[in-house]
Image (cartoon, rainbow, N blue to C red):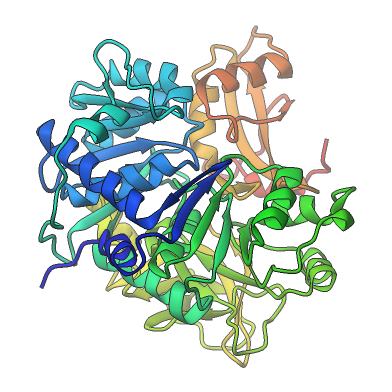
Length: 513
């Protein structure tokens, strides 16, 4: 039996080739046109020598080029490595090398940092530039034009016979230690997760018009607002960067029926000064994820727009949807809902024993069809994360009598800033690279709009001096925009336990500065 994720686009294109698939600004592409471009770009990738099982990295915002390059890679038999478009050259170079990507498709606006990274990743043989102007087929020296590859290549007529357990997507995630890891998601992982969203969670079909502002390089946007909508034959309206005014305008102009966002987006929409001037009567479905949705914001938005925001939970390692509040059962505000069909949750204590009592916190462990096959080239990390088939999330939750789960804490020190995962260890390593830093710890502090803001607390080396502003600027040079700390506090020494470990719980307990 073979399975390829691109079948979801192929079948929708075969069924209704003239139906609108993607809209960006004033440009709308039909399913037939998108599918034809996918097949031709796949031919171009094969012409470059890219073969089944190889990896193609994408550094593309929410533009039609993402969809085309994403499924073209699958048509060529490869696996997609979506990269955050905010990464620096250092970070891109690491991801290219770690994933063993043989090609990088990059949006023209991110070309400078991509070129710098490409030059330092000898294993990545092809730099492919995507441009907004479809007639512009020029490319810098040493690069190829995505437009030219589509225009000049013969199409790949048939999907390659990839297996359900073959890797379809490598999504990069991280932990509190070490560098980012690539979660290998299979064709079946991604296919079935999209199928669940289409049929069971949101009932998507050809009448669905989705405003897709969640980044497509992120698992949430990729599965829920891209793959599942295309699977249902719906219409995706793309917004490359969230702006409340632009979101309102698109919702009204296109009669959007589906919106998904992180809590900060709902907060911005709810408190927009001109919110009452827009007609959102077409809005039927709203989804929230990426961070805990404040109950007050959820309730206010539901009442104002007559919708029912469904909140769920997942991770890159779970494709990502793992649990959700569902349409046919009462939702629990503040809850991440129930495990999706075919997926099991269990809570375990610090010793790994199963916690059965209602209301007793334990670490969420997940088992099911959505769990990754492992971290790419990191068997030890995989063995640590998946024990006896159970993926250990690091998130602490409780369960009520009806089986609904409630996140209460994070075992890991991850900060969720505006829906983006920020991993303190990565920032701390950058800080320790500064000659003035003797000790560093990074924590999240509450923020009204972002949920959490990144704060660094540092102690200086003897005889050294540096300002918080200089340290922020230093981090900004080495980290993506959503990662670097906006708050830096310099103290004499960081609190430590008997073994010398920095006690972040004491830092969190200190009054905000």
